[in-house]
Amino acid sequence: MQDPRLPILYSFRRCPYAMRARLALAASGEHCELREVVLKNKPPDMLAASPKGTVPVLVLPDAAVLEQSLDIMLWALRRNDPLRWLAPEAGALDGMLALVAACDNHFKPQLDRYKYPGRFADAPAGTARELGAQFLLELEARLANGPGPQLFGARAALADAAVMPFVRQFAMVEPAWFESQPWPLLRAWLAGWTTSPLFERAMHKYAPWASGEAGAAYPPA
Ligand SMILES: N[C@@H](CCC(=O)N[C@@H](CS)C(=O)NCC(=O)O)C(=O)O
Image (cartoon, rainbow, N blue to C red; front, side, top):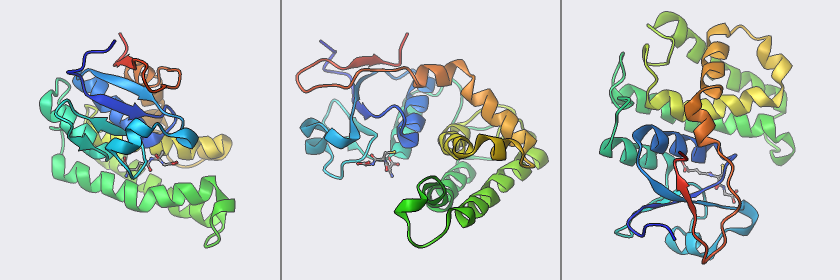
């Protein structure tokens, strides 16, 4: 039985939005009960808390519901930010939020079109790849012109964790093509993240949760 004073995180391992929420929770050290969701069969408990039906969702002990991944990141880091993800070495929170908005509003739609061309009648996958690549070239320029090797300086911060799962997905569509592009700093940045102990913890595998069962303690030990 989990501690009823812990927040409940409805999560799906492969969802990039859920990944960024799990990364921030792990970085903050905030504990929660993780309930792994099967998107084709969402638990009624999750839909009762958040009828819009996307993951991640964080249900707080006072029953308040956070149903946007960025809100979950900010909630966790505002409670506890030992790695100083809200205070990057270069730039400030506003700049990080602007980059995350560019990722979510401009890059992610291209990623979807690139990854699932059959689902979109409006643009061929090649166009989506080119448009997505523009964002990645902007990230490369930021890494080249800023203090690096993270997006906002030497230390990892919120923007890195929020954007990385989407860049990772983009890279996985055509790995050989991604490797051949003129973004060596971005590749090194991505490799650093995907081989990090923090990412390993955030990608821990959990069996799907069933109503009435205890969820898993997150972050894992
Ligand atoms: N704006 C939301 C987007 C979350 C989202 O779209 N999650 C996807 C999975 S990656 C989802 O749950 N989709 C619903 C479904 O596939 O049924 C956030 O930032 O949390």
